[in-house]
Length: 449
Image (tube, rainbow, N blue to C red):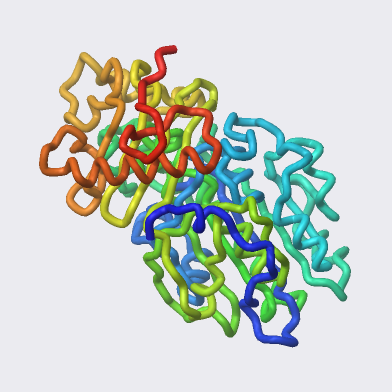
């Protein structure tokens, strides 16, 4: 479905409930991993990584194959989850920007519906935002504390913000450790001993996170709340490796998403609809029976949890701005194509500092100019980038072959430019729009900074 004003603005009326009249509001356990690409769970086909608890969650519930972040950076994407708006709309597009105190979040809606709100570890929305929680704890507080202290006569929402598998990596995080010889090297990385070692440690950190998921699942059973608890697991952005986190290629914006609601989700279901992260806020509102403010840009995916009719998105949008360097990029992704708009193409690819300190980037640097490199790996060392990148994801899932100059793809290019430009205008983007043919929009020009 094309992006229109109607898809942007939601009714402020209470949505239709995802549960039957008279049923209690569900508890919600929201698990969010840190720097984790969709391929890296066993249930997504990675046979080398050990994630039995999340694999079991997928087997009992729903696996979403196309979940996309609003931004491939930690705090900006988390702000989009909380507000249902893309980061530039809420002035949270820069890494570490605190949530503005005037912004509505789904926590406000849940609190009004009587939810007890708890959070462990990483929330990443600033100190003032922390006052919204009824309970908050860091890494040293046992998970049992929340369940022991929560009021038993109210539904709960528990945010579990893992700091795994975020860098820096080290050996010894998980036992037995993953072996470098067993890892699956993605095509956008060279197959070197250093890259394999880096991936093995990433797998260890992911497995450690999975083990803690299992501890939380056991607590749901022990406290006899599992039957009325919706469990959601999602990544905040892609893996902290070159050409992933901090980019708008799929390894940076496509993340795992699993859901299990006993008695409501179909065991082993797989959904292929496009799910943008701005959809979480209106979904939580629907589950709680709360109204959705008109400003919210997402819409509820709750029908997909319960088998009701659902109108899928025709496209999803993502943005990248300031991390530890400024790189303003926008993208639109459909089921078949992706368009990336590099507003400052004079900048070469620059990895985030945590990636630059890792073994994989150091291996790439050692190869550059000294050893033969595959063309797809040399792309990271071009002195600048094209303003527009167009990819046919069906034929080129790794996004190596830019079709923006292809005469056979100009109709697709112009359509995506138009849709992206309208979205940028309607979400109050500060960048010039991406396409001159969008109605009422000015000509695109690259920023020269």
